[in-house]
Length: 371
Image (cartoon, rainbow, N blue to C red; front, side, top):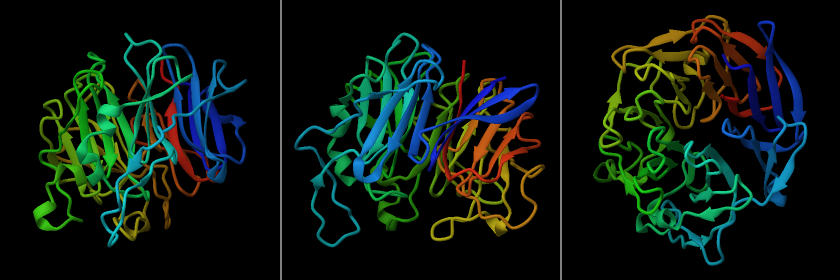
């Protein structure tokens, strides 16, 4: 059972510890700063925090002592001349220069790549580091794909890579999910890529473009550690699942009270079990009926359960962002944080929840420090 949790918020990074059966907030780093992403690397004990200072730009920090001390790193940077695609919803948009707006995902490479990190950014660039974040290189094979110019922003103004899944048994195989740009997979450590969204559909596009792989809006993608050919995606138009190594996807229809949301987590030992946070889609983006719940699937998608014990009983308008739901290595402990600063933890797979705080800043990411 994990004993540490990092909570990245609009006003800094909070460190939580579990002691004598109780979770409590300890350290608070980068007070006042927008922390968009955090990562604990179990291979070397490093902790990373990505900050967005708005006018002053994106910063990246690393700690080797659980946050007691931080060193600033040079963040990823787009090369001179890089351009992002034109917004397809404007009348006469032209490609514009690309610059780093946000670090939206950070993941470790495989255990055979001890210093490898992957970084997904807005506006849609994937970066790789082989020196534990000291330096970064743009993965040009994906950036230069002609299809990239079709990508466009979903919840953000520009497209962004928010999910990176490194195959636990083959670190050469990496999959990334992009809003809005589909799911891209490399089998050769980034030398080449294919967009693999067969079975997904985009209701927000004209009917003849609904199955266009390059306009799909996967909100979040997670991969089963125990059966890596199984991945789950919370998509703008529902929940999709693959069991054939991302060759094809099928829609999961039975999630209650809604199939719309942003976050998903998969059980580390049970690939048929996953958790979601349902909401009302598009311009609403509030819990269904004002009732905040967690949905759980335990049978691969045939049925779903609505989990409410310990969650708010009255009207609630919490939304959970893509990275604000996580499960630890045991599969028993889950954490979920909301846009209104509520933080809950479950230690029984979601059957019941305890409130850790109701007054944190808006929460962007929760991550257990995994072994």
